[in-house]
Amino acid sequence: MVQAYLSGPIIHDDLRRDEFYHVVVDTLEKNGVTVFAPQFLPKASPREIYLRDVREVRVSDFLVAEVSNPSLGVGMEIMLAIELVIPVLLFRHTQSKPLSHMVRGADGKALFEYETMDDVRRILNGITYDSLIVHPCPSCDSQVAEVDEEGLRCVGCGSRFTVE
Image (tube, rainbow, N blue to C red; front, side, top):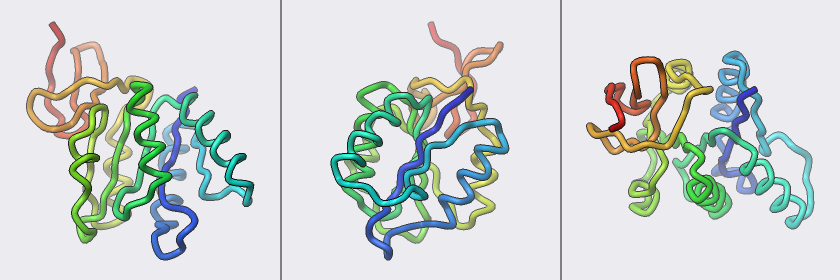
């Protein structure tokens, strides 16, 4: 079974994107993906949260992160996934402030911009989760691709390419 980690601001109510979190969990579960979503867990100590979240990122097949608002915890989760070569799917609302160059330039990620929750559903429904790998696209900035019988397909722009 495919496992995903959902990353997004939690402790600052004004930064949370609860509708986004619900849509991601619902859409991924409908696609057969098990989602670890710490946004919906009871309060715990900082140490328990750190150990739990690091463990869950490590066992995930990919990470989905809402990056419209800066969050140190989200940045740590993204960096851990990048270091472990786990594909990272970043979502940013079109009306949010500019995204950090550090995040934009990171390896192992695909960045999607959305205006509505229907955009999020459409993007997520267009991805084959059991075949995601970290591999740079020759046509865009995405570094996440799907593997199929024809080769690779970029999840960012949809370009097809092969690995030599």
